[in-house]
Image 1 (cartoon, rainbow, N blue to C red):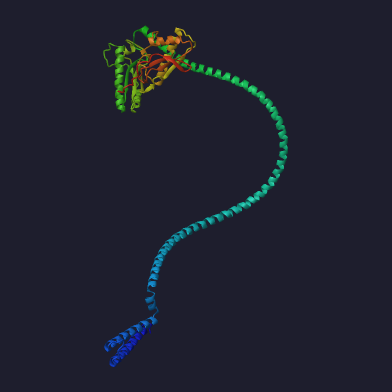
Image 2: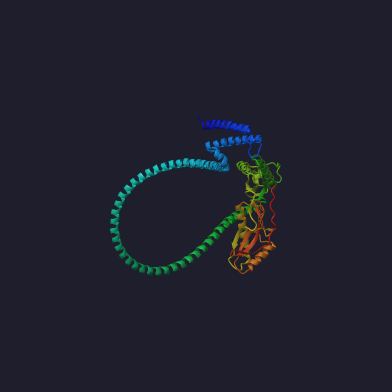
Amino acid sequence: MDVGLILIATVLVLGGLIATLGDRIGMRVGKARLSLFNLRPRQTATLVSILTGGVISASTLGLLLIASEQLRKGLFEFEETQANLSEARAALEETQTAKAEVETALDRVTRQQIEAEGELTEVITSLEEVTERETVIRTRLGQTQNQLSVVSQQAEQLQTEISRLQQDRQVLQRQQVEVKRQIAQRDRSLAQRDQELRQRDEAIVQRDEAIAQREVALERLKTEQAFLEDEIQNLESEFLKLRAGNVAISRNQTLALLITRSQSTAAATAELDRLLAEANRLALNAIWPDAPNKAIQILRIDPQTVRGIARTITDGQQYVIRVGVSGNYVVGEPCVVQQEEPPCVEISLQARVNRIVFEQGETLARVPLETAYPSTSSLVEALRTVVTSAQIRASLEGVIIVDNPRLAGGFSDPRLAGFSESVIDFLTEVQNYGAPLEIEAVAGRQIFTTGPLALELVASLNGQPLFQTQASEPNSPREEP
């Protein structure tokens, strides 16, 4: 049976017994009409009942305290129990926090364990590879040891040979000392010879430079000579034409000139046809002024050349088209008047990109003077040579020369004796300078493909310009049509 039930039953029985006993005592006190503490009997009976109830309560509480240790602790140790409970709750919270941290650490350790297991797997794989390599290396080591034993035997043989060679080396060193002494004597003699050879080489280099300069000058003179010979032949031909009659059109004369930028082959062909028709009309008026039909074709035109130029000039660039005469033709040229087929007036059709060929100040040609005080005739000859050379250079670079070059701001023909005042002053200054100078022909302004060939004369000494003719008209860029 449960102790609690026994305790309750005991309390009830004891309470009943004490109550009965108290009632009997109260009755007896009432009947006996006893008086305690000078109280009335009735009041005494009431006091006895109160004391009896107190005894019942005290006995019940005492019995419960004797029987239940938990009740004793609950009554007498309640505050201490509350304090312990608060400490227990705080300890519980700390324990729960520590538990959460431990669980977090456990998760981290678990992940690290997984990673470590992966790394362990890799390490095991690497260990297996290393083991295999170790096996291979041990095999090679065995082979190497075998080879080492062979090499050791060879090393012993080489040591023997080295000893022998060291002995030979000592002998050779003694011989080397003797040879060095002999070489020192030879070096001194060779040094003297080298010095002589250097002096000879310097003399040879100076001679080679002089020869090279003369060869350059010779090549330039050959080019000029060929040009001049061609000019002489042309002049002879012109002279014959002059004797035969009036020259209507001379060789290299420009009949027509066109600056264009065509976008299609058809447009380029149409422009070329109009240009050739105008050139034919001008040539016909010059050679046969009284021609009955002004539409007579007298120019010999190559259709393939026309088509080729038409295809060339359609690349978007600006081109200069020139129709020039290839020979000299007199007024009333028989082949023109007789209307021979094919037409007899030969022409040259040129197409060149209109661009800046020479910048202002760029040197086109130069001629050195041989003496410090040249004569007037040699100065004039040098001037003609440098202008002619400049014309040749400009023509080779693509300049279309229509008129004579503009020398020092004015027109000048180097075959004539008349020069401008600026040129005469320049020649006078060159003649009186007192040192052999160089006469240079430089571009007086930007020179385009269409010209004109504007030149300035510059006198220089050892590549340094000294003075020049007065600058020509200011440079004005060509406007594109």
